Length: 346
Image (tube, rainbow, N blue to C red):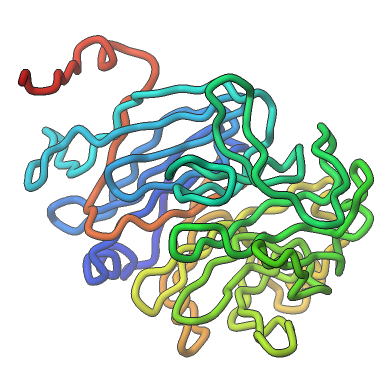
């Protein structure tokens, strides 16, 4: 069930944007859009352990527990489906990846690739990677402090910021080279790393996620503190811009606004003992699960959307400029058999 602030749908209309949101906890991908009367509309599809997603409005890549899926839009420009959707993502390709624990993902190019394609954070192997035609994946880059590509989550590499079609920065929970070593450094061991040089440009972060380059700054979520902010380039210091009442993970931009994904922290070790707990208590806030729209010029939270009941955690948030409402074909039912779209015969 979705609830939203009175102005949320109207704000999406003003920005002419909709969103795709992933939840590995619920095993869902959600499309948040609006109907013709500008009322809020949500559409969801089951996708086991869905985390990293990316789309240009026509192609959608989405990760699942052991698969990487490519969906393609089937709605021609200027047309809508019977339900009013101007995007209908149909599954076109599924690749068996194994349990890589794929986090952030984007389409781009970097050394080791023959062309443009999906690049993702293979968290369980502490590296950036892409697809392989013969093996499970092709490693492309790893932090300097990681000594080998092995099946051990050593640093919890998770976030990736793109610049001009190539990975520019990544975030990790800690600069650890031992299995599970990041867990002991959750409060202040987080780092931001420049991919091309391999240099660590910011330290002392708490559970950092979702780095993004926007408007000339490197933005990220200092999730262990519940903060949205940016990195000061000269000093590497994190500058908070806004407090987020929940475990912040997933960041997109629309105009001058940041859209932050919020989760209700689980009552277990990974999320316990973080500064976020103290911040919430001091502010007498209850953690939320949903989206928060923040004005980056003032730091004010202007609009919100909340998932109620069974949805507790989100991972990724992707903006879809120019899209009013999107849907996707699921893997069950008759739609996969019925919707056949051949290419035009030459």
